[in-house]
Amino acid sequence: MRYWDDIGLFSPSRRDPVNNYRYYSPEQIIAVKFIAVLSDLNVPLKAIANIEQERDPEKNIELISGKERQLGLELLRIQQQFSILHTRRRLIEEGNRVLREHDLDFTEEERASKESSKIAIQLINEEEIAYVVGPRNNFAASGEFYESFINFCTKAEDFRIKLSLPIAGRHDCFESFLRMPGEPDNFISIDPGGNRVSPAGT
Image 1 (cartoon, rainbow, N blue to C red):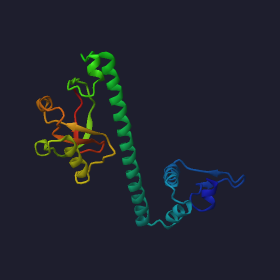
Image 2 (cartoon, helix red, strand yellow):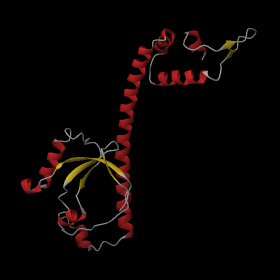
Image 3 (cartoon, rainbow, N blue to C red):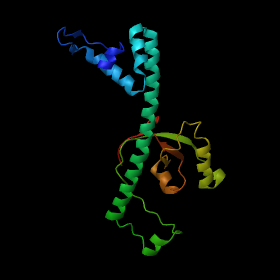
């Protein structure tokens, strides 16, 4: 606070003429918080002082808008990182729970075999999930999971899909899943900023 006063950035509302103590009014808290935020965002104090002294609204708007964009990008990055960690943890926890609590009726040979065609379907209660849908899959044309998935990855940018986020398969309905569980109708990116929402439920 003393340094802020020395450079003309933020001065006390009054000084004691005897001991030179600085006194600040309650309404100055707003200004202190604003300066502290800009300082935390690496805006030089002297630059903040110049803007405060000039009292130029356009310069204030320009500075604040730039920092808002910076924070918006940082928030998005943190949301994406959270989504990756949160989704991975939930999948691991759910897999562990299923293994512990349910006998999925696999023989030891089937569990050990990499070629077993037997599958187990487990219904779970899922929280609300935001996501982005990729292009429609056409397994009839390609005949292979790999080609459909590569098509999804190739067109990800067109659909504003971030491939760093968790990817899942989406079926239009449960019947579609039962008919061809390995051929989802679309691939989706589980994205906290997604334009679609899967409601919480089974």
